[in-house]
Image 1: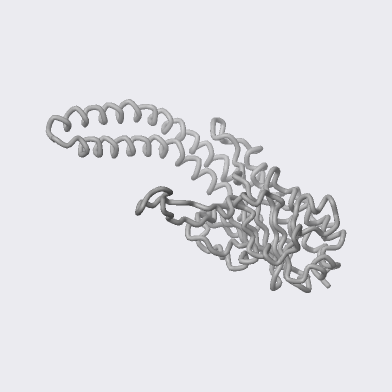
Image 2: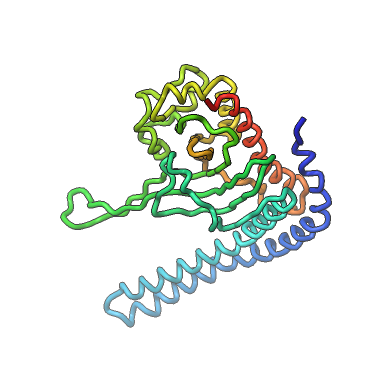
Length: 322
């Protein structure tokens, strides 16, 4: 019988009492101070904007300069208002995730600089000229190496505005907004294949590069499975043989790990990749007092433990690799 989350997190209470609870109490004090201060920023900033406008307009024939100054002051006010309320959120998130990952023997990068997306080419997610990733967690889960990060992979382009001769407008196509996970595959299938989410073709997440290799409907003949995934493979019959009943059941378990997320999966070259389109991130709970709550930390730790569930599911694929 394998380890449970309770087994893996046996030292969490000690970690909380020794390190995290004092940190959260300190952050709560900073949060109360910051939130009191931020509400003073709005009237002061608004007053500066009005004062600058009244002072500068009489001095310039062209009011655009005055408006530009007022606009910059307004942006600075809004940024300061936002920063005073969010800096504690970021610090708490990074501290808790770092401590939990350390307990589990994982590495953690808040900015996800080291996260490689090459293996996600089978899902059409290796490119993108606008990529923002965070909360990278990496290590080994039950003997299987993994790497994950949350964020957005998108393409930003400029296109000609309809009805104009030279005006352009920016256009952003989001390939995925959510979670990317990469695992070593303990028993890779005989042929590479991808599984894309059953979403409307107009959805950005329908952009799966390998889908051009799929059958028209991408079905495998299992109603429950076909309601979630569409198969894309260069050799669909071989891919269907790999997707036997235990493997399909395991993939459906993985797909259900994140409520309301649109899942995709790819298997190629001994690597299994998963993408979950969801606006949600690791949930650190409501950012209001009391911050020092063990249930908050335990809830976050159980979310991180999802990698063990994926690793356990991957081990069932060894019976259908050929």
